[in-house]
Image 1 (cartoon, rainbow, N blue to C red):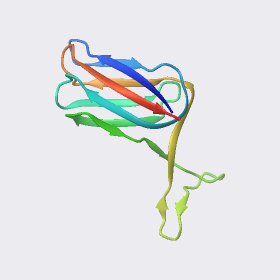
Image 2 (image 1 turned 180 degrees about the vertical axis):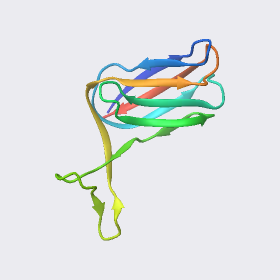
Image 3 (image 1 turned 60 degrees about the horizontal axis):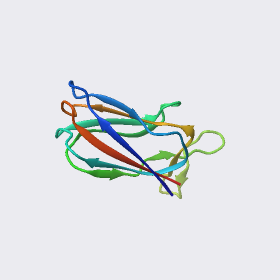
Image 4 (image 1 turned 180 degrees about the horizontal axis):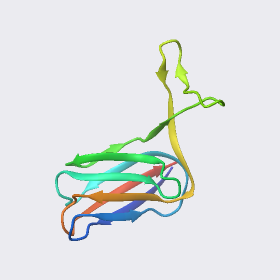
Length: 120
């Protein structure tokens, strides 16, 4: 596992966009460590090149972690389901020489938060 740490500082209007270094591998977890972002901060975290969704959440108030997953599909594009129950299956999101794009809204003026991206 490798850990990529991205510190994000907001502008006066409470917004920010930051990027990780280039990553190749499966993203297993993204951890948000609250420093002083305002309560109710909003995140939109994606792969830069493709826009693949990793984490979108509004009104975050404390440090937290998420394990982004995406739906899996058969060779013909049908959703893969577990047994007869029809439970959808998912897998970690993979990036290939791509950066993670972190967009912040409502973070407060000149506030800081840190994101740790765990990649296998």
